[in-house]
Amino acid sequence: MAETENDRTSRFSSPRAEKRVLLLKPRGFCAGVVRAVDVVNIALETFGAPIYVRKEIVHNRFVVNELAEKGAIFVDDIEDVPEGMRVIYSAHGVSPAVRERSKSRRLKVIDATCPLVTKVHVEAVKFARQGYALVLIGHRDHDEIEGTLGEAPAVTQVVSTVAEVDALQVPDPARVAYLTQTTLSLDEARDIIHALKLKFPRIVGPHSQDICYATENRQMAVKNVAHQADLVLVVGSMNSSNSNRLVEVSRNLSTNSFLIEDSRAIDPKWLENASTVAVTAGASAPEVLVTEVVAYLEGKGFADVQEVEVMPENVRFGLPPEIVQAIAPAAAAAN
Image 1 (cartoon, rainbow, N blue to C red):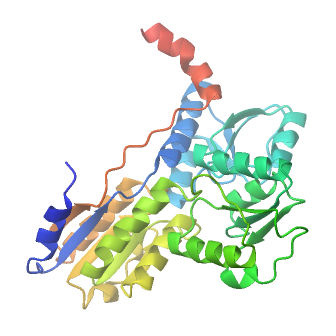
Image 2: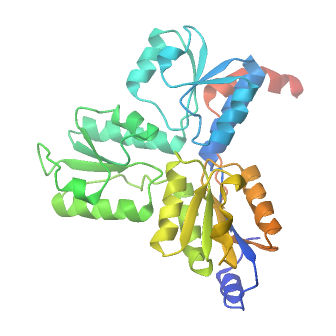
Image 3: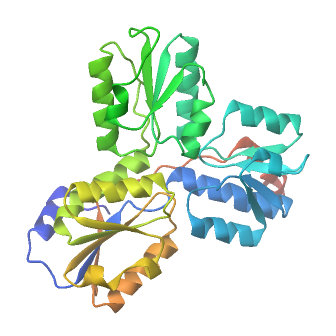
């Protein structure tokens, strides 16, 4: 059962235990990542190796290496997939140009795009068709931004900072819309959106925010606990946007924080003056790596491990139709 606010307040107001670990919850895999990893595993089991995957299925080196050992082949470009073979699109989505190229090369596509990313793509198409100039808030080199930008490249501009908003030029300041990358920092997005509203008072946005529930929940968990910790460790890969944002959130609250791939990346010097270490994980980091980090900390004397659930998280996404159709005969036979 999740802790109540009173439970958390009571515990945190009590004297600090020596050498403790606050294990944040929610942490780690989000529904979109669970779905994407399941898609690759099921495809390998159903169709056999090799299964090609465009880009990293999720931004985590451990996950990618584990799937590669099972027979997944990760490629940077759709041209690297032999004609007629089966390919999986990563959770970050792809542009229409990639879809067209896949079709022309007769590839058997399984789309593992996160449904929340698909939502942003649909919004981009809608705004473009309605004649809006589109401002896409995010990091230019991120796979998700590349895919979303491809939906309406002629009318879309990408901004990554408040400073970049000043340089924006649009055909009609009264017809401007904005969308955001799903893995941004809430604070970062808020500041850029505020700057956009000052520059374009009639700007419109999505009906509901684009930053995904998991990104928000993990950031809120850090915000709730960071002030109780001397150090925050975020488990995740260096190219994971949402993992990097967790580090930024912690540092913005003046709590020392580091992004670590696994327990081997922990510098013992970080622990020298720490009595409380908070541990969380980005949305693409598997729990096995978190478990190893906690075990490492316990070995360093942080024996009091407390899981702190800030909010419940029970989101699930269904499998893509290509996978459902493929496994239907086996499921029917089992029944």
